[in-house]
Image (tube, rainbow, N blue to C red; front, top):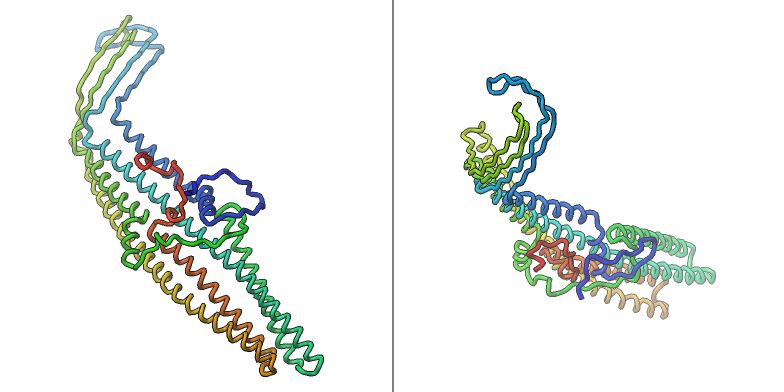
Amino acid sequence: MRILAILPLIALSGTAHALTLEQSVAEALNKNPRLLQKYARFEAKYRDKRTAFSEYLPQIRLYAAYGYENVTNNSGNAVDTEMDRRELGLKISQMLFDGFKTSSDVARLDYEMRADQQSLVSEAENIGLEVSQVYLDLIKAQEIVKLQQKNVVDHQNILKDIQSRKSKGLSSDADVAQVQARLTTAQSGLLAAKNNQFDLEANYYDLVGSYPDNLMIPKPDANYLPTDLKQAIDLAVTSHPEVSAANLDINAASKQIERDKSGYWPKLALELDVNDNENIGGFEGPDDDARIMLTMSYDLYNGGRTNAKTEASKWRYQEATAVRDNTLRQVTEGTKLAWNAYTFVGEQKNFYQQNVDFASQAQQGYDKQFDLGRRSLLDVLDSKIELFVARRNYLNAAFDERKASYRLINATGKLVEALRVDTPEAWRLEDDKE
């Protein structure tokens, strides 16, 4: 089942919620102010497009006026009147041709609106990755705390044993002091691990809006993981929303050039003008007229404004092209880095797994040798510490591999889709909803 990003509001007092990664991402997308900012920009651009489209439609203007008029001369004739003047007029105009200004403007704003939509999707991808990273870091932190607690217990047990042996004259004060020093280090490590866990819980709350509980280790969808670097880069440059947004910005800049060139063309309009006036110009009585006219206006010279605006638009087009090229570089570089992390961390995890296996065998062997009197308690403690470090390294590598998987999917622009999180209908364009 797909998870809708707009969820019912949940009380956000200190209550903990058992949320999967998918649900956590959906919650974050529903509340994050960065997304609300992007969405507001997208909606504003949609209204801008509708404003430009209004130029295609008839413009209807009603004019009315009433007041006092005193006339002493009118067209060279002596007139001395004082009357109440009334004006009432209706003007309807229909644009027929404006040098492709309106069509270019509508197309430009449509491209800009679609670019803002892609930026909104890209922000959702980035927030989804942030939630994924902190979600996995939090589970890892919880496991590290458990591992640190076991390490402290092991040190405490060894300390009890060695204190017992000292009382029997089988160990020295130096041995006891050494174990006590190692115990304090282990206890300090436990406190640091708990502090890190609490920090991550705060980060999770900042992103999701609720405190986590009973987190479950997520598994990335293998269908969204590229099989090689070339496939990963191809997916990124064709699917990443930032690349799509940059291409749309180039199209918008091209339409801006066409819009600014409209000044080179004449303007044609059809106008209907009807007036119902009374007591105008010092003459008592009605003064009515009506006319329908085809009008044309053409700027023969406007101080070079059209040339300057067109040249500026061409430079904005070059800017948009450079931004697109830079975006492609960044997306490609990010994909390579994500692929390298995914590949090498996976290999590293295998070595850490072997390290855990060997350290576990060594620790068991030391226990047996201690029972036979061939190893000291400090030797046993050293083997337990080595096993603890091996397990901690493996935990880090295992979770880093999962984080790298989600980072790689994000690099291709498919993380929200891979998590089965539906974006709200309001984020989509009309043709996307069909």
